[in-house]
Length: 219
Image (tube, rainbow, N blue to C red; front, side, top):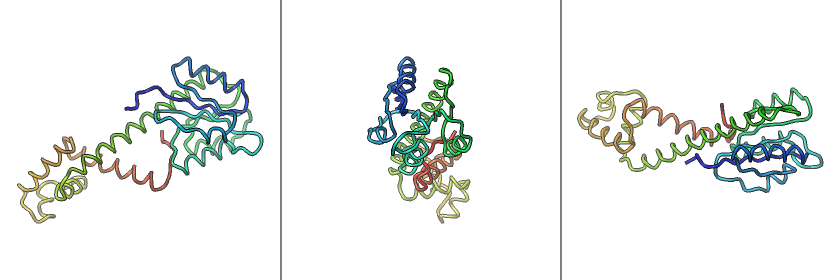
């Protein structure tokens, strides 16, 4: 699902920097798109596959700064991992960028291996995010096939209740609970109560991320 070719977006007003990073990424098998400003990047339609954004901190003129772009992407729910690069030593800016979820903050000049390692980490982070989201979407589709009773049992199992306790809570026999539970587990392709609890937890965390607009991937 997320094993396709990754895309690296490089946004830097220095043509030598962005072309050099672009060439390195192409040599390692990535697709590359280069931009001279954050405005150019904002006009771009992003690929649907795993990706990473290499972003300078400062830009001349009226273009948004790197931090402003990071904030805007988070607010609009675009969770692309960001590797910041900068020709200026600014501890405050670097700390703020990392707090907001940046993969790395590299001062110029940086070594080739440093930027490649940071980009690789960003792409791996994005692949993991996509895999989690895919798994949750698939689980939601399976949950839609459950009956109302099976959903009740699923939620009570996620709370840690065993069949006897669920039967008492619902006012049905323990045998009835076990029959519905078996059907539910088969439909969800799960094997244990722990897996049920993990599924419900992951769906809850995804919903909270969407509600808050967090956007920034976590390590």
